[in-house]
Image: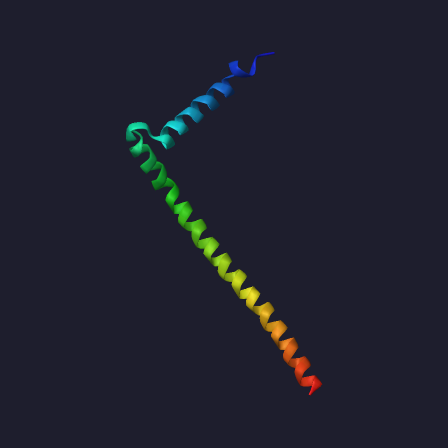
Length: 83
């Protein structure tokens, strides 16, 4: 049985993790072009999911307002029936 540190998957994972750390820690700003390219690829997805979250927030507020209206209607019906 091989040791975990001698497997090819471990080596690839380690190199990828080091590469990502170098890019995001960015010593001497040498990886700015790589970071810019990555952001260029990711930004459409970020915009899409942000717009989706804004829509969900609006829907949550809408359904919450329906619940408040129902409660207010019940109170008004009760008030009218007691008169």
